[in-house]
Image (tube, rainbow, N blue to C red; front, side):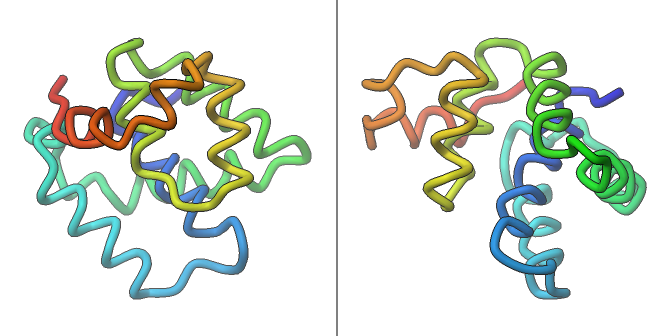
Length: 122
């Protein structure tokens, strides 16, 4: 079961792995993001490998993508759903997340909302 931090980390991992296997540099970027964004202030960075492994197992299931999106939605308070959405770069994942997390189309399209979502805190 994911907590809010785990859900955000799993979101980043999902996008990184969307078009290929994750590289060490992508994992390092996730680590940097976890170290930089205010939403992760209370997160114990020593737990990052465990969370990444948990997410990897979740995504490796037969219906992994759907299961992960459901777990992410369950774990995230509504105010952090935009934060999860803002961390995405792959169009298909964005579309899936927008629908599964019930994010309004105008919010998704608004660049100005991205800055606020990115620096959200728990």
